[in-house]
Each structure stands twice: as C-alpha cells, then as structure tokens.
Length: 157
Image (cartoon, rainbow, N blue to C red):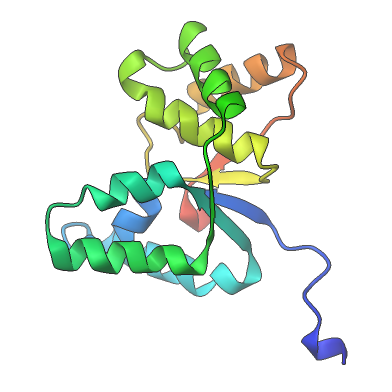
C-alpha cells in the first residue's frame, strides 16, 4: 500500500548532544518547547547521532535525568566514531576552526559529514551554529574535496 511506504526522501540530520539536553532542560523553557516541537517532527526525518553524544549524555550526574536522556537515543541511529572521523576532526583543529578543547564539537561535525547527513542540528551557537564557523568548515571541506553540510538549530529544520 502507498501509505505504508517510507517517503522517498527524508532529510538526514545528525543531532549533537545539545539537542538531547535541551529536550529536558527546565532552565530554558522556550528552548525546551522548541526542542519538543522538533522532536515531534522526528518521524519525518532520518535522525542520527554518535557514540560521542551517547558518552556525553552518560556523564549526566543525575541518574534519573541520565536515564531519560539515554532513552531518547532509542529514537535515532547511533554511529560509531571511526578513525577517519577522528582524523577529519583533528584537521579542523589543525586549521584553527576549533580549538583542542572543542575537539568534541569538531568530531560531531566530522561524524555528521562522513555519515552523509544533510544537516547537523545543534543548540550550540557559540561553537557550531554560527556563520563564521560554518564558512570555515565549508572552506576546509571544499579544500579537502569533501561535501558541505548545513549546521542549523532545531527550529530551522
């Protein structure tokens, strides 16, 4: 039946740790609401993340919150982080796009790019969702013969 088929195209999106965290963040009600609205659209997307996000969520000190955050991973594909992805993240650092302290952010970008996602979705405006950094990532990817990737906040999806 036509109604049973998966749509021929669903946007492929990588969710960084901030999207999962915002889903339960009571300190920022507006962001939490926007994230909940995004989450309702998740069935229309092909959503994924990485073991890096899982590891970051596993570090949540509150056991109940940690359990709820890790439960959100059941709704997305979780990719391993390969040596190629780590290499690309290191390249971003060596080119000054990210600092050593921001290696995890660089790794999120590398995983999203090398798993062929259309966009990386994040609430991290300081290190990811900003025009200057996106331009630097795009320039590096082109120089390396790699595709580009959109980096957007949940409401932009």
